[in-house]
Length: 399
Image (tube, rainbow, N blue to C red; front, side, top):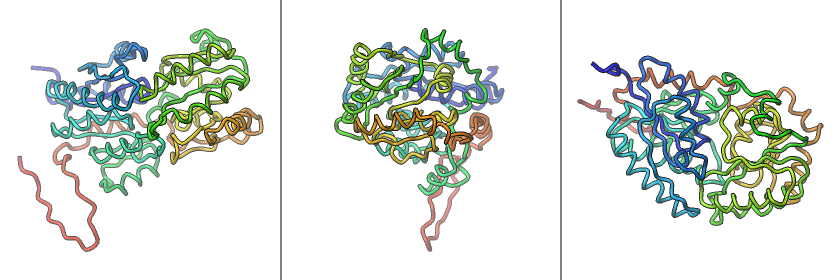
């Protein structure tokens, strides 16, 4: 008799280095639960040499990979993004049929996540979703996130405000759990590198001021790189050491990579990293002087280090933020002024004692506990929010 008989099958989908770093501790919790049969489905940028073949990291961590879905087109267009979704659906349909989860766990708002959610719907597999109820109006991620919320049956939100927003979207309150952002579990549970170890790993010496630059295409705009001119112009003559991390695999990414390489060739003290594992990236947040760009990590993770963050342009518009955030228009002079303020001792002093609204590093335990215990029977049938004066008849499904 198979040792997995009577275990609850939990499938987890990951498409990139970014979401895997958020999923690491929930995966650890699920893998350690003897009542859970865990399966990881890796797709997209994980399998792309251009983005560092981060499938290798999942393999090193020892998680059971049930399928590798080749779907990411080597494209720099929105048409390529749309086709990637379609290819992913075809691959995931076979993968979920071969190893059918009792529940599927998805995270955040990447466009690729529309594929597993759609396949799960057709196969009647309940979906759990992490980080719903947030807002980022400058990216199609915002629409994807809301779509995933309505396709999901269990929700884990990063903040209480996000929980209330998911409930306001018509989701039943018992389905919606305020867990916190699972990426913050690294701060509590991972061993971060000290300055000397980090310098050795990255083969550099920190020379203040050191800035992390993280810039992604603004996918809500027709020209996804319309705001990039001001950003790169500002960085070209910003003094200090600059550490660039690669952008997401969105329309316009390859153009951004080329601009980053061009900046590296002309600007002294600039380094580019295709991929940084979660522990290295978290350690870096604790050692640099500021972060500049339009990445959610500047809002969600940097706050745990009270790290000054210059948030440029509209990509993260509407997202909850702590007081370490300095918002800047995508204008060169405005970015210069914001960086100068972020690096000032006076601003750093105002951040003393601040807290991160996205949680305290205990999300993974909550997520794993709920996934292991929530009753599966009837989970697929969601009750709508009643209208004033509406009378409803509820029929229980029969096997």
